[in-house]
Length: 230
Ligand SMILES: [Zn+2]
Picture 1: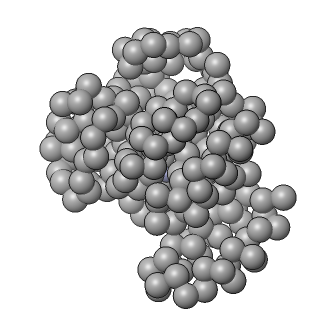
Picture 2 (picture 1 turned 90 degrees about the horizontal axis):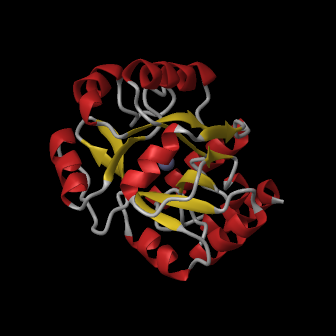
């Protein structure tokens, strides 16, 4: 199966794609499954896992005191703002997997920096070595090098904030029934993906600011961004 391991929904403050539109986009895409990784939210992922006719891994991209890490196969929400260690402990408590999204990405202010990644590297289950949205491909390559050196399973995701981005990156792997099997199969998986045009990232920054300023121009921006999705 092909799975995009990093997808946002309208439950993220910088994404307005409703769950129904995510389902439609996955159907049209080249992937068979997704992991939902909303920022500091889990509700959309839980709901989508019930609604979707395809497998959905429930994840959360969590802002910690040192940057973002994600949990996969979660059952319960983990609050942002905790230490890295506490956040990882909460992921483990629910038998989840520790996934580091866009490690070292210089254009992502919340990305985990090298020294913080090194400090927790022994506890990382999966490293995202291709994120379709980051601007400098060298940062993806640096993440791949760390994963190889440390023998950490590699993953990829689109980091989609618009429907057209869903499925742009991911991993092709054998079917799995448990988180343990998922990690094992990732080791033999094939990463695929192509970078997202910068315009999508810029549009997302726009959405974030609009959200912060009280939804005032939501309608206007939605109509402007619509041509991007066609
Ligand atoms: Zn993300």
